[in-house]
Each structure stands twice: as C-alpha cells, then as structure tokens.
Amino acid sequence: MTTMKVWRVKQANEEPLGPELREAAAALRDGGLIAFPTETVYGLGADARSTAAVERIFNAKGRPSDNPLIVHIAHRKQLDELVLPYPKLASRLMDCFWPGPLTIVLPVRDEALSPLVTAGLPTVGIRIPDHRTALALLEQAGCPIAAPSANRSGRPSPTLAEHVLEDLEGRIDGLVDDGPTGVGLESTVIELDGEHGIRILRPGGITREALQQAVPEARIDSASIEEPETAPRSPGMKYTHYAPQGELVLVQGDPEAVTAYIHEQAKAASRDGEVTGVLAFEERVAQYSADHVLSLGSEAELDDAAHRLYAALRELDGVGAERIWAESSGEQGIGAALMNRLAKAAGNRIVRV
Ligand code: AMP
Ligand code: MG
Image (cartoon, rainbow, N blue to C red):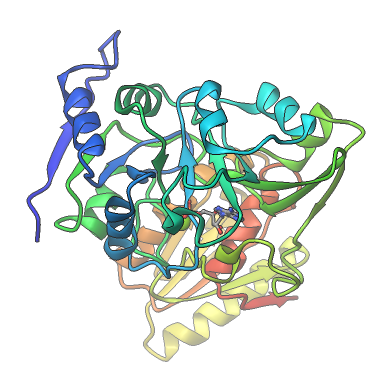
C-alpha cells in the first residue's frame, strides 16, 4: 500500500491552479499515478512517455496489457510531437469538438510515447478534455498524460472522487477531488477512414448525430450493440465491462411489456430469497416492487441517465443486489452510449420482450 494524497479543488477558486494542482502536476511529472476529474469520468493519469509510469496504471487497475490507453493533452500544439500527419477531416473534428469528449485515433510517431500506451498498435487515441481542473493540471504537467478511467478494470467507471477511493485507495499516489464529473460516460472513440469516413469504435459523450451535423458529407459507421463481436477495431472493446457485482439483464421492448417482465422476474427472484434491483426510468419506477429500485431520471432526459448510470451500478453493489434488471432507452443521441454501456455491464445478457 502506498500512502495517497487527496487534493480538494476549492470550488470558489477563480484561478484553478492553486498549490494543490501544482503538487499534483509535479507528481505526474515525477512518474506518479494521479487520478483527476474530466468532463466524462475520473481518469487515472501518468506521464505517457514513461514506460515505468504507464506500467503502474496497468498494475493499479488490473488492466490487460493489450488494451491501449487514451492520451490527454492541454493544447493542439502538443499534437505534432506525438502523431504523424493526419487527414484534414481530423483537424475539422478537432476544431468542432476539442476540448471535449471526442477521442481521435491517429497514427503515432515513433518513440513519442511509451509502447505500453498504444499496446503495440501503430496508432494512439488522443483528446483534449473540456474540464477546467483537468486542463489546468495537464497544462502544468506539460507532458502528454495517459489516462484510462480511474476504476479497477471491469468495474463501472468513477463519476465521483469517492468511487476512485473505493477502487484504488492505496494503489495510486494521489487524487484530485473536484466533485462529480459532467457527462458521466466515457468519451466517444473514433478512427478515420480516408477523407470522408468516420468509424465509431466506442459511442460516448459526442453523439453520432453531432458528428454528422459537424461533417454532413462524412460516412459514419459504428459497431452496433446487436453484434458486439463483429470485427472489434479497438482492442479494448473485448474487455470493457462496466459491470456491477450482481447479474444484470438488459430488457428491451415495448415499455409496458418490459415493466411486466421485470416485475415478474424480480418477484420470482425475491421468492427465492435473492436481493433484487431494478434500474428504471422515472416514468415507471413506482411500478416495481424489487428490493432496490433506482431511477435513472426521465426517459426524455437521457443526459441525466448517462450522468447517473455508473453511480447507480455502484449503489446496487453497495446494497448487495444479486439480480438486477435494467430498462432500455432509445438509441438516439447519448442513448447509443448509454445502451452500449448497459449491454456491456450486462455481459450482453439482453432479453427482448
Ligand atoms: P478507457 O481505458 O476506459 O479510457 O477506454 C479507452 C478506450 O479507448 C478503450 O476502449 C481502448 O481500446 C480505446 N483506444 C485507446 N487507444 C486506442 C487506439 N490506438 N486504437 C483503438 N482504440 C483505442
Ligand atoms: Mg475504462
């Protein structure tokens, strides 16, 4: 166990770079492992150029070594040292979405980063986060920071500093606590296919609709949750689980049928003495009698559901839920990312009613 430092960012600070962040940035530059908030989820950062530092990320998370890490930078001008020339389409997307939750996979420059970051791929996923504290920290650290989500591998990503402590206390050097994160789901990861093609490797904070609107002529294709095993373009796809400890089933179909199905299943499981949980939209929470019924907010406000999902999954762990059912939403906008994470959290146990 290492002693770990927790820096609390004072909300009232006009200038985010107080002594806390200076210390955290210095620790990063010295090869430390520091968790910090972003607009998506908390990240676990280390100097992306240092193999010794990056190796510690994999160890702390228990992450398989063939799953590459996203690199976070503060400024576009840091890109030139890290990547080879890239298509104009990439610059257009950066103009539109950076800083923000869009990770773009680009050809990596030889020797620019630790080979552990790219897991041996000729590419690297990069983004500039849209978060005051994250940007101040990255700027002060002055080096590219590799940062996957700050959870133990396979668990739901952390949207609160407390979640980071739950998973990683004693395994990392420090944590910058700046309250809840924004989007609540990870960034969208894309790769480019020539000048006009965008492939969504992982749906996330930037929606398909927003990408299409920014580049109307682009062909956008994406890995669908219906066929999770088709041609994984991103090695991480096979590992991400976001899973609670109980057995989660995602139920799709007409809302009335979904409610009836979940209600019956939960009743039967309760009779068998199992602790039951339901993740439902506000419109229907009152109809369930499971032991723990958690609301994801209104189904008309899927941004709220995205924001609440991981905390809700952790809450179900906290109460020891053994069998969990989740309602499904539409796949428009952030709904695509929400359903992608729920399907993975369910280990693809998806029931259509
Ligand atoms: P996380 O570790 O939770 O931040 O997730 C990072 C995601 O980005 C994983 O799904 C990775 O597989 C994906 N990723 C990172 N770098 C690359 C890359 N060079 N090519 C393809 N996918 C990548
Ligand atoms: Mg993750």
